[in-house]
Image 1 (tube, rainbow, N blue to C red):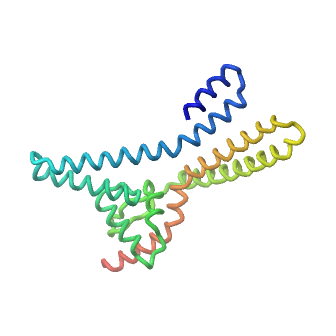
Image 2 (cartoon, rainbow, N blue to C red):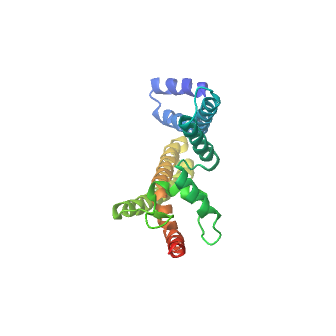
Image 3 (tube, rainbow, N blue to C red):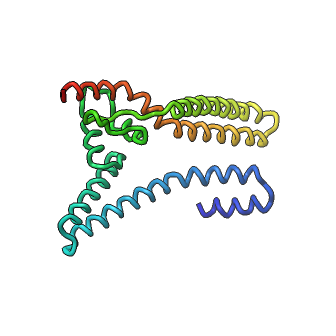
Length: 214
């Protein structure tokens, strides 16, 4: 990693922008996994600190119960990826275990920002505005277009290599850039897209709980 940084500085000084762009892309790729591990380690350290606080004899009563609830939230989040309050977690588990409803915990995690607890009955419902639905569709179309352009540019770089040599790397890097944008756009549209996808199943579950309560 350090060697790449040194090489990058040398390329920038020599105004070799093509090589600099390639090295920046490699640095971004190599940094992704360490950053994820760092964030996970931070959450695990937070959980350890909460456990230490729970063992502290000076903390008792309501404060101890509150810390215990935070520990449960952190441990559940680390195990499932869902950080939410107790009621939301219980409903998510209930839905995930219901064999009649085709919704997984992973889908609930992805769509969480568009889910809310129904006031009519003890169930989760989708909350999506027309603007959010439209934005999700636009992001999806834009992402697919960028993916197509990216693939075409990569293929063009392979074909043009025989004619312009290593200069064709510019097409390759541009293609990779468009593919990166495509994945980024897909990530932005994913929560609303998943929420829209599971909406019929949640509605089915909502009606089931509503009938059982009545």
